[in-house]
Image (cartoon, rainbow, N blue to C red; front, side):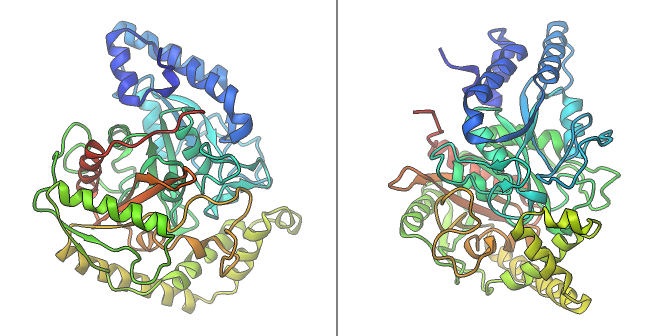
Length: 464
């Protein structure tokens, strides 16, 4: 018999409608999975089984009466511990935040899931203040990859990715300021999309500014579509939030990609890519040709924007901690403390220069998408490396930005960018394909991902 913890959200909803499974049984299954495996993975920093089961029982009663609140009523979901969640502390992986709160408000995406009747499983781990591309912090320690627990799941939504991959909830909310849903999705073999900036409203505003997005993390494209439909749309607390997309994400889209103009860039013109990753991603790009797209190898034509990204990111980190006392700063992750000191030294002119270069990057990509509907790249140039360190051996710099060249450019341009699992290394570690669309082309990116998934279903994690 299939363990309910291994069912997708779509499968759970079908079982609820058929009466073969209840939201309570689903919640009990994911809590049992967490109890079995999370001591090793450390995906969750907060669990509240009483609240989880209370929400599940309320959902079961609504279903009994035929009065569901929304499409996700009764589906377990985890929430990254940077998103406000009413009644639960949001500590952001830091010892500098008082757990006492008060915690009286939901982030917009969390509020919409609550309104839909989703069942909250807990808060997932993040590096301190979500500052880096791996997941460890002074508060809860090191989070590990289900495929190989000596390896990192990536970050900063590493706990969310590990939870989804390991069957600890089929849906997760993550955030992405420089790759933070795509990095861990690639390392753990799950699906994600960083939507167009503003597509999912964000409150409170991120100190990292308009680099920061909220995104779904799931085992399938269809599950991500359900989650997107639930959380997209304007919110008055976020002046930059967008209205819902013109059509829902769920239940549609082509089964082929005939006529779509697709660019495949193996390295963006500047990145170094592991040969195993390069071969797997190139094979995945060929699938788009099989599906009817016209695929050409082409680079967008920009140099690595890492220096400008670091000005924006490190200055944002300095803003995060500006209110802390000297004693509190001494307790920060040492790497975070280093970039905060660096970020505080930038002048306004340097910040505005980086912003201007960011705007020019957006221009380049805007013109590129007049010629191509989609851009395909590796999501990551490498597979998951050792857990508990910021960079792999041989890194040219001590910072996480040295090994994720394919992700942060598209935070700077605010474009939708998804990760599709597309293969494995010889060591059995997942490899990801990144699918990038023009700003506001979220539906097209999701439709292309859906077509790929139908053509090449991927092997999900299962405990050996």
